[in-house]
Image (cartoon, rainbow, N blue to C red; front, top):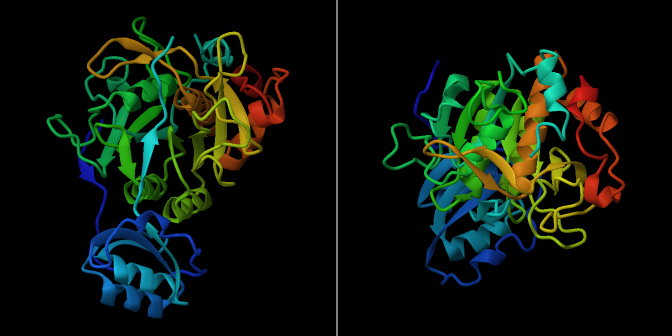
Length: 373
């Protein structure tokens, strides 16, 4: 079992791609003085755009395989670069946050007990928990841990991808806690879990770090990326999701915790490439906090979910963050049986249980892994 501490790369060159910049991409920089140094994500149309950005940058923080770069430069230069026709966008390297909230079920509700009893446990599938890390010493998780990588290092942990927040460990347990007769059991108890730490101790991470984690997952050839995080729209994160989907990764995402609301699904869940998951409670009613909207594709238990706690033991958390890993684990079970990401996505929708909620609230319905297998 590999438990390496690979940092997600911060390379010093730019690459190229195409499109145009949005007019409001730099709205987050309005408070910056012209000479203040800012960190931005830049997408290019061509080599001329790349060279123009290089000339203005004081530092290239990271480049991506899908041809976006994270750079530091004066705010004045970033604003000028936004108007360059050879640059498709410039955006502030903002943050997304773990979507969880404390409140007080889920394997039976999604039919995972049937799949486990039938021997469908996710063995051979790889799930990246793109989150705050995973506790490498938790007895419910350690047997299933594979590789780890980090864009945000866990300070004081035994490995850089350790969990200094707890959110990622909780999500990992729902995906794949082992069936060992203690603690909890996950939806896919024999899956291989990979910690991809992109969120820090306070639960936040930059667009660039999150995009790097998604890119890393795709480049490893892993099956599922579990993304229990969200925030505003980022073109760099959107590009990363497109890149990963093109590589055959199933992108399971939390719809957001903005409810009660209408048409309020956050990003990256609102992207076409991702599967947006809303949350229901143990009575199969929509959770009050759950974001809803036309992008919702599936729903799963998210209120009062018991799972693994960083440092050992278990805890109860609520949020669409807790619903998302149910779908991640279900997708892993199907992909372990030979389904592609797109086939697993369609299968989960075709076999979902209609809870009588609107499509904006439940999508196709609550996942039913027992039926899906």
